[in-house]
Length: 264
Ligand SMILES: Nc1ncnc2c1ncn2[C@@H]1O[C@H](COP(=O)(O)OP(=O)(O)OP(=O)(O)O)[C@@H](O)[C@H]1O
View 1 (cartoon, rainbow, N blue to C red):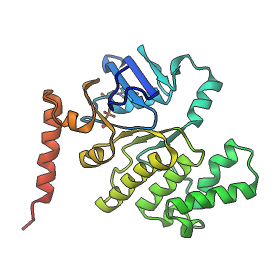
View 2: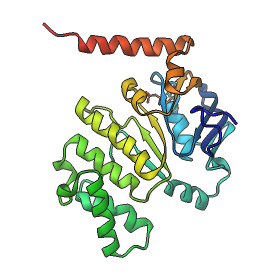
View 3: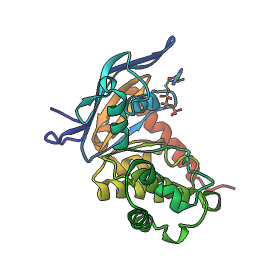
View 4: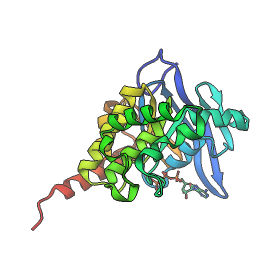
């Protein structure tokens, strides 16, 4: 079987076949095909409204396809009963734009939350696991602080620690660097790469940041009007002659050079 990373022998963590989804007369997905081999990072890009979030919501089992199918670790999501869906979601670490941290809980308790909710670990084991995880994301010193007292980048790292504490096999990121400054963006990108290295997880990342995408992706998929119009290793996608891909990359280059032009 072929895939977008050029790794034909790996098992597929995510497989999307001919996926269609409409909302009224809005045809959001028009036959999406995508495969993400285990342990690889796939970055989804495309202009606003092209269908990236709708695709990801199918992978999370939050939306049901009108046609086609989504398989996660070989199992068809739409055919899962509630218990199996719940099990699948436990294997997914999800990091969205908003960190969704609990403001009334300190960093330690935020990160401990999934362990208390989903495992039977003793408080002693929880303490050890949370402390190890906080050390990995460089936040040991902030364990007793509250989300409101942290910078945006630190909040992201807490979100990442919480999303990964159950050691998910699949990490889903929807625009994790939205609104962050370049330094913090670099730190979050680093976290994503670390997630792959430390957890061996499969990652699917939606980001508008083309530079970040090229830095972290094993494969890129560009969406346009509900279809994936180019997919594969970054160097291959960069050379795509599809008009929408060329326009997308040209637009990014133009914005980048504008941002770099010295002012005054
Ligand atoms: N629940 C919904 N009801 C109606 N239309 C929806 C719904 N969710 C998404 N859509 C529509 O589906 C299309 C794809 O939306 P989607 O959120 O996937 O875009 P996107 O590529 O993630 O965009 P962005 O980069 O702006 O987040 C859009 O036209 C959107 O308006």
